[in-house]
Image (cartoon, rainbow, N blue to C red; front, side):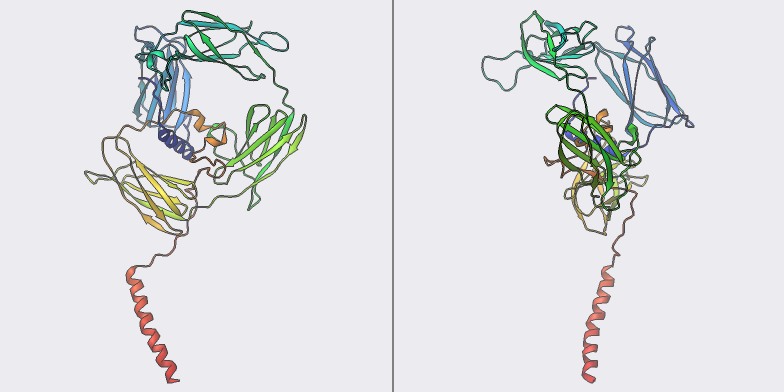
Length: 484
């Protein structure tokens, strides 16, 4: 199978799934399962160094390993549940599949990968680009630098917005050796060459390559100045003054606050997560910098600073908490044809006014319950092999609103999007977000463990009785006053 692209909606769902589930694989657990096997090519040849990735779909937890010299791979200490497994190897088509693993099951999964073939109409590489990469100041070679080429478009004489497939090129990349030398296959036509090396400014330029040409393209990179500027401080809750504490590790990326710095003068980006005391520290280049601070359940904050060489600046931040849940949505998800409850369906509700979202999953009775912040919401429900169902609703503060949905059988299997950057964002804006006003429209997850105080509900009958009492009481009171 080809590794196909996904629409934004799928990516958005995956980001929500990733941020709402923090459970991980437990090593050494009882009844742990195992998945193992070999990776071959379709001509029975061995493929060493293939990358095998497994995703636990219930927890959106991902592990990647490489096959050994015997083509063998193994994942152990696996929990029971549904998984996605993906196989990648250079020069071969990507293959993936889904399966369910029982408690304590040891599953052998061998796979044969087919050699990569271009899409119908695409061209095979028909040229070569090579050259040396050197330091522009010293003239010395730069080893281990990344060089890539993208394009190979054959421009039409007439003006066309979309080029036909037979004029498409491709993408290739390599790294420089100890002499700074690189060489790779490419496509004739118009292309962009990109180069990157640690400690140097990035490089890009456009090149034109003829069919069957061996293009000599030497690259000179300019060193960046040393990182001598420092920003540090504490991030606290504005109302309580307590530190917004974090813990290090990918599984804890949603905890604490993220401080992200973008240097506008010396194109550079860096980030830090607060520690258990709410402390952060960033080392960067001198220059004019934008700082973004983000923490789940808090409003984001942004400011700019101008850092001098060797300057050490202390900046403490106080973030304003977002609203806590104050209402509850509940109901049942059922099969539209049979009326039977659907277990394990996902239900998501997005507050379009306050940019808060909550999620829940149905139990064996098809029942779900989600804590929300009052306001106008959109809601969607998904289940394995069912089409999704979406609608809108409005819930007021203190209300417990019932909303039942039915799903139609026949949808695609739910497969999480393999996007590691969604699990540990190197940029604060990776959070689920809509619209262009990033700082004001950052989505956040509603705390499903928070307490919610509901407004006491009064039945219509009780209201009628109260109304009758009031109607009788007013004349009686008037009569008593006249008797006096």
